[in-house]
Length: 281
Image (cartoon, rainbow, N blue to C red):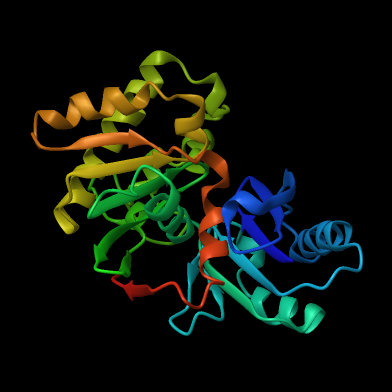
């Protein structure tokens, strides 16, 4: 049995699989992410215990809304601040004594889209997950090798009014479009935003995407995350906005949805699958 975890800024998802194929998902649970690390980890281990029911565990894959250190062992600058100093990898290995991989949730989503989703037949694309924050990667296929460029697109600078981001920098894309930043600035939930307020957010997202395309030019963007899942009409809205600047751009909604990071992190447990990660900050 294989366990895949997706720890987001809002929700945590846990899935159990009988093999390294996404079609073998047997159990799945979603719950609110605890800001307190100890309680959050306990919720995860409780779910794993329920799923395994004394069955042998082979490996655990983890995706998290956070940057990952160069050695792939430490969570840094997470969207869940209280988890920053914790070594989730070490804690899970100590608990289960099995192999554990940890990657960024945007990276996991991009991998899933390249194997099972709308990126399956594309040579290159950028995957963006838009929710509490803004994450993502650019993916290229070179033969049988999947090359993934990790560069935290949500933290590229788009200029502006000097708005401070949770990462400590100013004018990051995420500080203008991420759910946490928008709700804090407007003092209301994103679900309560007016049409005019959303138009302002979409204008900032347009600027952000142009900055992302400046760093990694591609013809296709695949969008996922709570904002897109709840507002799929934003896909065509943004594409129309971008056409005035980039004629050959196509925006697609993720065909996998909120389970994309689960499926992607499952793929990282497959040692025969070629994934080359590039830290491109």
